[in-house]
Image 1 (cartoon, one colour):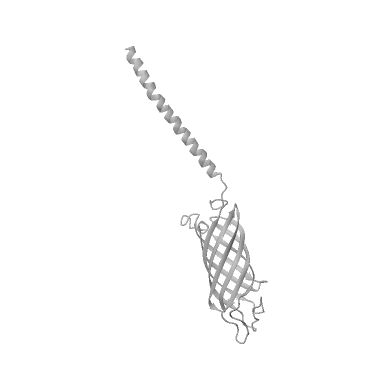
Image 2 (cartoon, rainbow, N blue to C red):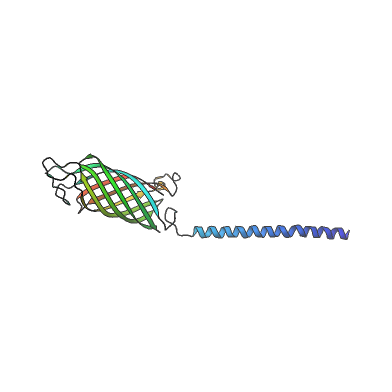
Length: 217
């Protein structure tokens, strides 16, 4: 009887030791996972949850309108009283943002085509800087250089329609991510933004409101 009891005790101990070791291993793995998750959670993040530092390319399509002063601007011929150079535009943009925590810097190039009015083509290159907010939201200022080519001038005005009239451009704008307009879950961190901006040519000699969609990656 004693031998039977001793054998049972030995068998129980044999099963208990591996089980205890397995429990210790599982606990250690769980602790490691928790520690790893904690490290990820405490890493620097931008307001939209993406990495605080990196490179973010994007493309955009925008539409709007521009009106120039009738006085001579950057070589553009002066227009008679009551006539101003203006027109509706469709613009394509390619650019890249470099997030730096809560702020960002970036650069972009654009080509715009006049679809009505006096403007034929526009080409530009710009630098941007601003603040990140909300789900991929941005508030920014921009400065750059733009070339303008016109389709026509006022009747009787002498000017070279094949010439590119160019000067510095300044602007401000905002981009709104999907969660900021109640569309969370549609695109995630990479996806679409709505962009709205206003810029001016040379020494505040034009007014150019634009709006469109930005696809960022």
